[in-house]
Image 1: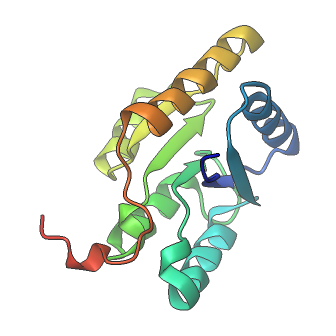
Image 2: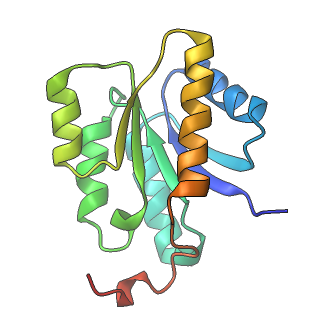
Length: 152
């Protein structure tokens, strides 16, 4: 059996968290979630994890755009400035289809921006495509130890 794909999920709406996690479960995704209601809590967690065990960094971060305390764009700004944390892929999963939100997210080096589908069937297919891409098509480094030695 493959290892769990570790995902940090930053979402302040408990219903959205439930729907997302249930959808991952329904498509038999082998993943584990660490959940936070705002970007500030998630950043504190990642900073502490980096100090304790950089080899156990998450495989990915899924974040909403509109969050309390530190929104998704502010979170992305801080994360991408950090030498270790910036290598973690970040997917913005938002209800916002605003062109300016999307452009700003990509300007801040988000790895992808997905607009949350309103239709449950489309939602499930979107998550299935997301899962297939990130676990089968994309190559991700693991564990994250030694990334500081990579020359780009």
